[in-house]
Length: 313
Image 1 (cartoon, rainbow, N blue to C red):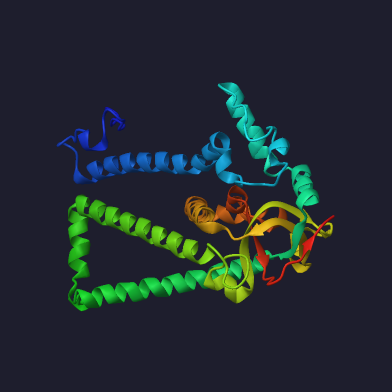
Image 2: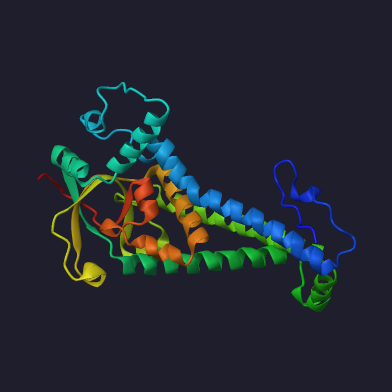
């Protein structure tokens, strides 16, 4: 028995010849295998895309101005920098990406510019805030769906679900059409969630730091930082002790995320959660209670502080 051909750029899935001698069940599973192949390729592309950006475009994750000595700290002099070519370009980008998390560089920024004192938000507050936002988004989706049904005068009682199930069992193409429509609906929903989070986290209401309704209720905010330096040594005893003891830190510049940074953070967050759920919860075990998308977009979640104090070390 010949192996079914795998779709390529020159031979898309729609051009695959279907053997009429096969049963509908066999044809369905063959097309399903092709769809899974495409889905795996897309997931791998989405998973490695953030690393591609960090390696080749590290300037996307760096602030526009990081103080008068930022050029010297990053290995450049003045306003002009020498851009290496070939393999040196990748190595230079990797070094710059590593410098983003270098404790010595962050200490240098705080020592040069000072830092605003904040308390880093514990993880349990972030989880509760996220749960509140999920409930709010779910209620908005229900309200929108009911408004849509009422506007088009759709009567759910008149829909024959048994007939739909029987038609799907007889013709697999209808199942594929339903699946494609659900995927499009899920993409639209994710985009709406990204817009929702972006608009709420661009800037604060009366104080520095953006916050969604859930974060507002929990008293935490998102701020943009180039450097984070702890004022007290981290408590011994692991993650539990880390969440029970307030973590005070100096942050610089501790500014509003802004539209671009808020949008990048929202897109990265929803993409990572969608691709790696439930393993995405492991991404919370970074220094300073920061997630992967916090590090990528140079943000941190802190507790409310209407009047942060600028301190120098």
